[in-house]
Length: 341
Image (cartoon, one colour):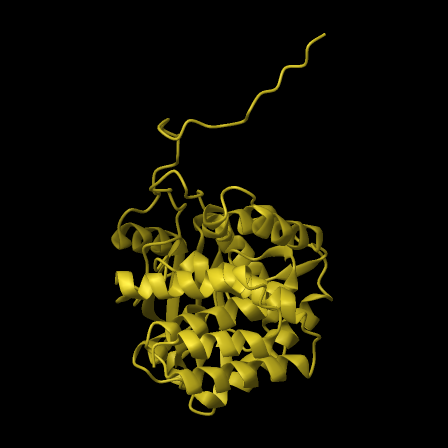
């Protein structure tokens, strides 16, 4: 009997049946919180437009932030729907880290039924987002070692956790983050498929794929605090360090940071991580190159607006794969050659 092969392609023009937002306006969320016995007024929005909205507020005379998630509806055929259930993953990780050596916001109230969490506002304690500093051309060198240490500790401490359900999988994550790498080598896919195999087969430990400057706070002493674990999953922990470093490279290549400052920062961060955890330098370079390509058009990050910036990032990311860059030293040499200033 002849075999029949079916190619599982979903027609991109077909409308999917996505849920409508439960709370389309902040006032609706405020009313529901009040019904839950929580009288709180939502202030300025601090973050919004992707999966969650984060508002500043006060609760029981303390400065807090209120984080609420709605399912992210994809706006083009290359996007994945991201469920609001990711907030439950975020809450689980935050709960596990409350008394750890990793600084995270203190949980005040968790309301899983409405995908809302009230937590400590880190800013009154002297913390500010690393991303905001970078966009102003300020790279706090004293945070490089602290972030490297904290990422290593995060990997180590999470290995003691019992597995819990997450909203995403390593397969979904690398499929999304490797899209630009797949498009860059359409006739072989070799570069992507090698990374996909590594990433999905090393899935015994928890990993944080969003450890970038938008989710890392620093203070004047260089101490760090981490936020936003909703998209974490059981996958390859070795992705965490290059994922972070890719953003330092991105802002160096596009001229927000001085090349020498970026090189020193990356060196110190890697060395601090190495003091506690081994580093596969070849894999680090490939993961970093994949992340640079993923963000080259400015996806979910600020400041990447011009064709000149985007072409510079594409050149840097592709050269990592074209030349098989496989060490920190050769990666930084390439960075110095291609950075803007």
